[in-house]
Length: 302
Ligand code: NCD
Image 1 (cartoon, rainbow, N blue to C red):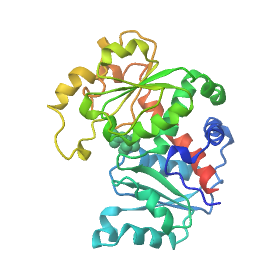
Image 2 (cartoon, rainbow, N blue to C red):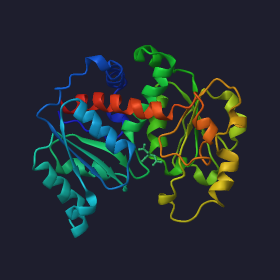
Image 3 (tube, rainbow, N blue to C red):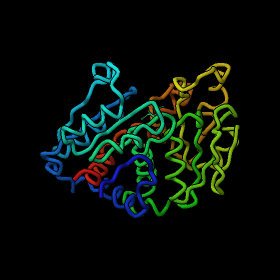
């Protein structure tokens, strides 16, 4: 059966455990696993980490990647996104990896292709591969053996801080981390909280970062998604930073880890000194992203 990865709940808990365990067994990866397979990446929004991470992950497994440059594609000549997808599909790729500014675009495109669609981020909706690498990073911090690490997550508390309302990373993490038994505190000024119904018993809210730090095992900071704000929702990023930036005096010596999907707004999301603190795993996330995407591509396309 043709499977797509649009949303974290496209995978069962057992499948997630399998994929993340696989990501932890780097030595088992076969550099010919995706040999003779070709992949198309098409990113309608900017990307540094996700685009290069997919590229490297696929090449590590011997696959070929064609990166469609949207700026010079026929999307700029008025071709519909469905026609673009159908035409790319006619070249028989083994998977199409897409990022799009409109929530729901990858889901819509499923109807026009005969290969797995992998969602690399759609609007403010979902970013499932980012949530998978975040889950891996957290589990791996608690135990090198990912299976054991995943078991240790039950009852841990993560504070997700920032522009939750506009964050696909927050949405995907909330879904995925809830399934692994984490408590989630959404920390944001009211205008950055979602209108979505987060009516789950493991989710609570706060607008006071300092007061929740003592309860948190993990802090996940998010960038303010200015490109998704139709109207200016806040005074200034400096006002926001005053209350929500993760600074040394806010975290003290607390035993916790700090994550951020990138790109980081330095000294707005996380201060320079905290970015250099050994509790800050931002670059570990990037490193893990390649392994997790290798395991995901193996799962969906081989
Ligand atoms: C995020 C994204 O594009 O959703 N970054 C990423 O993929 N690592 C977060 C962001 O842009 O703030």
